[in-house]
Amino acid sequence: MMVVVVTGMPGSGKSTVARVLAEKLGYPLLVMGDIVREEVVRRGLELTVYNVEMVAEELRRLSGPGAVAELVVERARSLGSQGVIIDGVRSLEEVRVLSSLGRVYIVAVHSPPNLRYQRLILRRREGDVGGLDEFRLRDEANLRLGIGNVIALADYMIVNNSTLDRLKEEAEKVAGEIGNAIKGCSGGRG
Image (cartoon, rainbow, N blue to C red; front, side, top):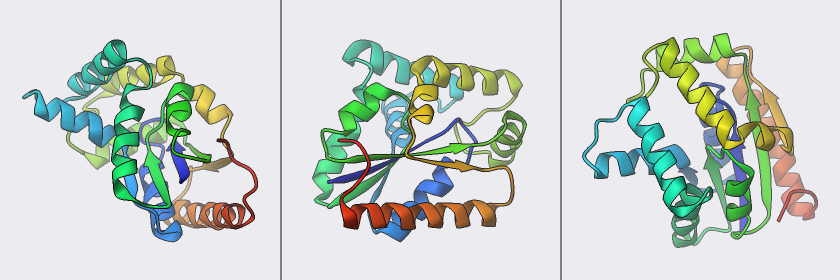
């Protein structure tokens, strides 16, 4: 199975990039954060930044640093697809677990903190940040998990400091490059 993982700090634009990659490459999209949010709801907790981070940390503490990725692997295998796009990888351990599915390509999306904060405030997704303290909490949690290491080892980097249209153009370009790499079976990890 071909595995394309998308990483980036909260509000960087990784979900937009992941959707474009899924559409252009024709692979299903799995969102790691959705799996954690489902667990929060399953436990009867309110969907807040604090509860999402608490449940994610508890899953990792009880089942290891690749716990969320293990849940994603189960879902990916059940899809019966030749490839999958995974939105929200936060650690090299998660990349390692996901590599059990097959060759992994890492796409990192970077955006300055001030833009990311503005986007998150405007987005207003359930469980998103409600203020600067929550924004910092999420950033610190992601950095503690090792997201910086995943970004540093990315096969493709998209800098998102412009318009949504420009971000989609960059994601389409990366999709083309990954598509060519898949056809040539070169590059990537796994």
